Length: 158
Image (cartoon, rainbow, N blue to C red; front, side):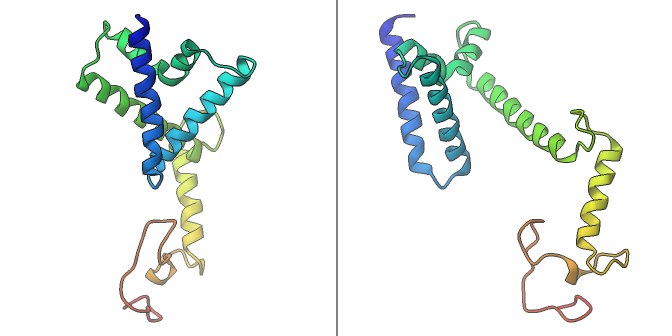
């Protein structure tokens, strides 16, 4: 690859990393920036405190370059979208397995799911009567339920 092309790719990568700072409210952007900094920190440590352009380029866009190479040197919008979607869903799947996998074996079974549901039900069933009543549900937050209106009466009715 020509040096000017490498410089252009690096500039785009750097502009993307810097431009991401404007969207600090967006958690994904903040996480991406954090991962970028972690990659740069690692590259610095691996190379005695300095990074050449080639090392910087490898750190910034290694996965994107691999996608381009794997697709014959060109990447279409559809191919990139498919790769991004796959990566996103794989991250989500890893989080779900980590949350539910009671044995720590990296797999998800019906027993894992039932066990998690039983724990969650027990947390919500505050009076341990085997039923979850409206008043036992959190008003907002962790379980994503936001009730509207005033206070509930004793039977969980508004």
